[in-house]
Length: 154
Image (tube, rainbow, N blue to C red; front, side, top):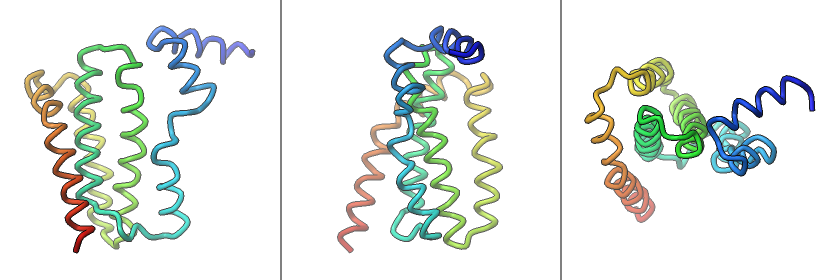
């Protein structure tokens, strides 16, 4: 094992469990959820059939939960998957906007979402706001799924 990898592993094990480290960094099992969808969108140069509202609701939910856990200083293993889901879901949102011809909205999303995320995790957002956002996850996810199923019945 080279020295850089050893140092990285030691640092990562300060915030993760050995099992979590193995899953994320040895098995690379942190991107299996959304990567196939990203690749399909890129290969087809189309996001047809993907609801931007559903993607944004999902992004809201994972962002709220991850930001809350991060600010509460929970161990990385409590929110680590959320970090990777944020990256992948935000990319999907940007691709959906881009391939639907919404270039201005794509630019605004790519500028404003990272700013909002920074606001949430950098300690600027009051804790009760983070708690309220995180508490809204279940209703948001239910609304997103109901919206998807309703759209599918049309």
